[in-house]
Image 1 (cartoon, rainbow, N blue to C red):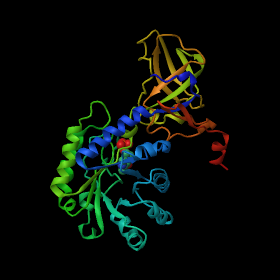
Image 2 (cartoon, protein in one colour):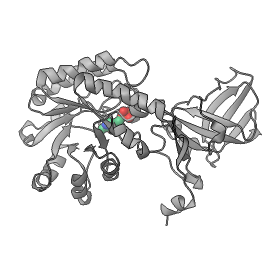
Image 3 (cartoon, rainbow, N blue to C red):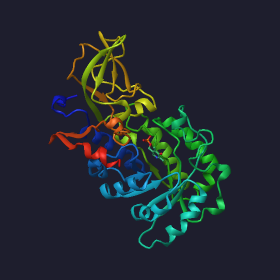
Image 4 (cartoon, helix red, strand yellow):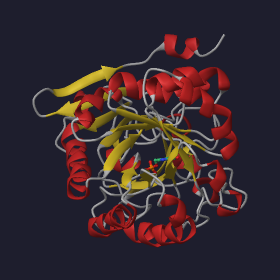
Length: 379
Ligand SMILES: *Cc1c(COP(=O)(O)O)cnc(C)c1O
């Protein structure tokens, strides 16, 4: 990493615009080669200081709530899509003021809100239904929308062809961090089960979970899959990746506060798995750290823990070539997505600052947090 990490406030999330731009260019090349439309799923990445840059390449945003829809509308200002497992009646008018595409999770939801959509005078809103093709290749149930008794999407058995009037699109989301071979197998099932309905649609949304910007991602198979539906049914194809937009573009920089000993050396950091990288505990997974190895790989092994009082606030065991000491900085990799959007102030722990890096301006601290942010969520 060529950024001067000693110049950064800690903890901080830093996103490298050069890497972000590279991802946008890859995504845009898929749009250009196929004519498909790619939306940023804000659930995974909502760093809106980068939305103006993203808007030069992507078609718009997708959102899962009123607040995300509003953020995308205000900060990106292009197409705004929304899908939620259920909409809140009191919020729906405002949702319609921001969104041009609304996908419903059930025919009952569609029937409840369709008059509102029809009767709002200001713009055209294209409506869709989320389907559940009951096919996915995800091992972890918490991330599997096709898991047994899933609440997400309408299965073929529950599909109501006679209630489709006014529906212009179908939406499926069944992938997570996957390559396009999974997509290719998935669309075969989608086509086999729902093809006769896709025929009547204007658009088909392939959801997220496509790891398009990963170095081993097979873009040709993605392109073939998009073209398959475009050519067979004349539909417009949408993709809405979150993770792939920000994949490998950001870091979390933290500082060692103390080293304690209890059967092994344990370093306590000014960051926290529970507060600042919740997927480390939820998924769970082990983030990479620059210049660190697996336990015992280098001479000095440490368990890295957060500074909350949660016993399980442990990031993992890592080894280093030099002993760690207070004040040392650690750089956690791939920390742009599903971090800022999920972090919290448990234990009164402050949030990491948000920092941008680009070649012209260097390091730019775009946001710092403080006591007021903590207090404002409580009463
Ligand atoms: C989570 C989600 C996405 C984005 O998924 P990524 O894995 O971040 O690409 C897109 N669409 C829907 C409906 C989602 O729930």
